Length: 139
Image (cartoon, rainbow, N blue to C red):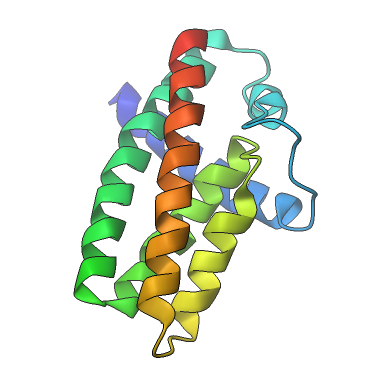
């Protein structure tokens, strides 16, 4: 029950936060938890739960995104990237242009889009692995 409440709160927070961060510049580092820390009001336990949730859900969604790219399912690519966008923005992901580019390409697919998406997805995965490793150290 508590886990469900955390997930609901996380999703609502993501929706509100996305509007605020869409115009902000990327951070210099790989990620910046300042906004997430502010949203959790310094509650370290809640912050750790949200970080763990990000790690778990992002890994699943990146696998689903990889499958959608392999199958050329642009609608699913768009849906997954739209969902991921909120999560990445909430953690202050320093390379948010990767997820934004993926979503944009999937909205307007072209002949070369699959190759473009594969290239960007590979970069996104590499950057995400770095962020997750850093996050795990902070838990």
